Length: 233
Image 1 (cartoon, helix red, strand yellow):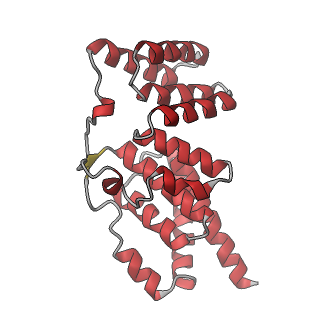
Image 2 (tube, rainbow, N blue to C red):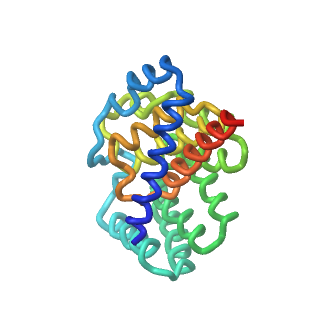
Image 3 (spheres, rainbow, N blue to C red):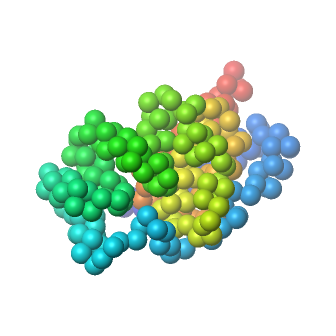
């Protein structure tokens, strides 16, 4: 049912995009969008970067156990306790922080979630998800001007991580959505669309899993609607 609702919603967004493109976009901006290189310098597939490698089967099993619990179990207090224990037991494994901050959100502990995001970024500033979650937090708190520095002033994943040739779907979708949100806040819709077009081209809107992806689509559509309404006044 939610998938059907989203399909209808996305059709509305596509209509807004077409109307905006026809009435507001300059020919020069249209051409630059066509030539955008976002997402073209690397592959999307299964990846095991160094920071995602587990030292042993015990660590990997514990990660997947906790991850399944946060996704399918409502006992978030138990997940939080288990994840905090895992973070102490397995230092140098930032992916446990991803579970922790989601568990806090699902448990309506938003301040604790923000602290977990900030702690993860402070400890692991080179870890992509730590960057993505921290950058989104900056956007939510009205500090979007600091986002580019989180990504070292670079415009795409292969520029941030020149030694990597492959990124997985969650990494790419999260990064594109974050950058789309950033440029919407900066009132640069053409640049925001470079990242949204990469999301659509890669098919990251199906399945519609990431909260940040929904936020990016919502915010971009609302910004375009606002511009179209202004034009009619």
